[in-house]
Image: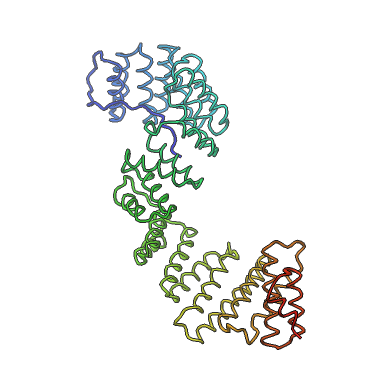
Length: 475
């Protein structure tokens, strides 16, 4: 999340080296800012001349010190902070500046003390409350919010909810951040706050509301990259892919400070993929692979995207080639689901209408081999995988005359009967296995007694099963 802005920078003016005459405080700060930025050898002398014109105005003096802080000249920033406090000890600007100097030096404890001084001595100045809350947002988010609530009582018009939302988001209290953001009017949000709010909603999978926020931001800040990105992401997740392409164009061609991520290309590619614009989708996914700035771990997922596209085109050589890259990229993080995807790819190849008997047989064998690997590597999935292996046989032999499925159904019976407790899905699979054996013994083996044994098992589970009743009555 974008951090709060620390610095107030006035309007720019032309640098002059001659001593300055009396002028209003705003111009004095602006002139000092230009002198400091120009960095002339006698800059300190010039700034001192400006200071003399406002030496009784604590706010103006603090403004000069802030210009030095912006230039990371801590010594002079601290000098003018002290001068501001000396000019008016009850003006909070000098204390806030001292606190911000400590923030820049990574001394949060000292910063917090200075901000508390600002609140105590200048309780009507909102900056002390705001900066105290921000600097304590990680260490004590509840205390930070409480300090902001004090500010609400002093100045009801101050955007307390927005600052509170930022603090809660920074502390990873996302629900609380969303609640605070929801209280504020969208018209009061800065671009980064709209993006933060939309992102928090996106992470909660509230895509409709996230899109509402991001698209509001698109109207107000049309070239803000993060908001264009979020509209793209939300529309892809809502399956509104034609609209998503419009925001992909805005993201890649009409956003300021373009810095693209793997997810930008992936979401763009996904929208194209869903619209069956396969060549364009592959081109976007390939950008992830070819971009040296994207980590290898992010590239791995893209291999599956490309594999899926080729699979949808029945281009199995390319589908397999990319899925194997996906497998290789996940060697250190392999899951049963990843392996299962490879087996199902082989299975689909076997089901391809134009596949020859030899191609079908080879694909089935490869699928079965992958399933066998899963049972060894991931024993917890043995039951579901065994069920899939049983069904593979029917692709080659729909009548299962060779009984290729039987070893797997028998194994399935053994697994399920060994369970301490059986869920409805387990019982359903067990009944299928019993029914397979019942039919197998009648049609393939012509072994009525064995068939009746399995019919009896089915009737124990389902007394009104018509087929099992018929078999049980056979002589």
